[in-house]
Image 1 (cartoon, rainbow, N blue to C red):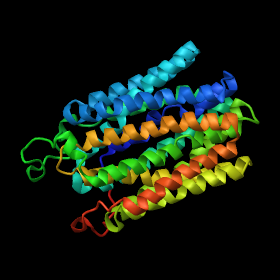
Image 2 (cartoon, rainbow, N blue to C red; image 1 turned 30 degrees about the vertical axis):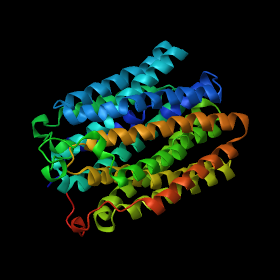
Image 3 (cartoon, rainbow, N blue to C red; image 1 turned 90 degrees about the vertical axis):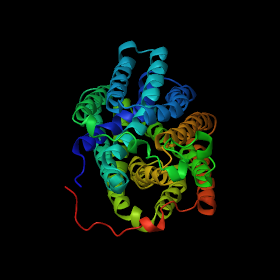
Image 4 (cartoon, one colour; image 1 turned 60 degrees about the vertical axis):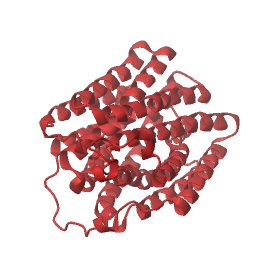
Length: 409
């Protein structure tokens, strides 16, 4: 089966759109608007909190609606308008409002893309298509980072806001190329197996959480993102604290490029090994890298060293973005609750990210960047221990296969 190319296009443009203006907003508020680190933390957390509130309802809605493509397009439009709204109104109210709208729309985009992928290709080709989706997503992120650096250095630090809006437009065009009639909406929710549910209806929501694997995985990813979410914004601020906004954005873009290059490799690697090795060994690598990255960030101030260390983010997040969906597909197969479960876990990710942004920014404000990074490394270590001791392999042995030696077109 060939890869779905319009879906690859959606993923190419989606990374910069789903991620929003994140670390670039931190630089904009610090260098151009002169906000305090604590205030920046609340602004960044506003989007994460909105995502948290909307994530579970978003997953349930995506499971139930048959107009997934239209909803995908609507979310991209909302993010584009909100991003440009920050520049148009240029005040605190605009920043918080835009972050809330972006966070709310982003809550839908992840489940929507995963659901459309599963509905188009099915479980048999889900690993292959997801691997390609992630590789294209990281390539789009890398291109966006290059363009952000060029815009910041040659035109204006505000160019990144226009770039996100342009990427949203590209995402809309690619979404329109997807054949909406080709999406199997029952399959898109994970399918419904009567042996699992006792009927042809989706499994009850509460019974979904009786699966110990889902509960342990939820705790692990909460800690992972509590440690991970604020690392790049903190590095961005550390880089820009001794330079202007233009160079701060350029160096932040360099951090993103370094990570995205590695993520492309990791997405392809995981696509080949996830059905052979299983999920747990791959995620173990991601959990190991995160505390190492936090410790290294605490020990170096050199700009080029910080950019090089950020490449480790490509290993951790490259694996996580890919294998996270595979683990959920394993656990929820036949329950009809794939997107709802994804929404609940993404809600926990959002809570972790919100706490991470607020806590880390205030730790830095009252202590130092070194203490901030070490606190994040300690959080990551707790997640690593829980994952190693309690998390089970989710890939069913009968489904382990050798990689397909023939590359897809």
